[in-house]
Image (cartoon, rainbow, N blue to C red; front, side):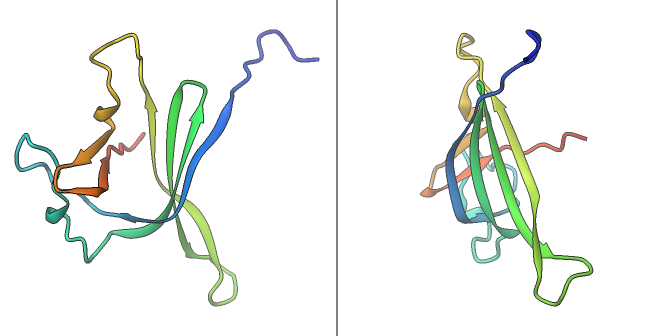
Length: 120
């Protein structure tokens, strides 16, 4: 029997994208927003998989990449967490908006900017 202090965490997979290009985005040049044309689109930093999960009232975006598996035969790979963005929005606070973490791009509907921060 579960202890009454145990917390149940609901997790729901929202989307999985098998090919997502990751770019190192330079600072915005103007208050208009990010421009994909400034990102050197021909040379992504990495090609990854993207997964968006809902955990209770938070959104977790995992960016997963493959790398050679150490000690394994040639060509063997392993998947690892390349980057992660954990987003919690307080909808009761009007200044706490989703676009702080996920920003549209002014010159493209295919790209978006995602705020990633190192938890260390």
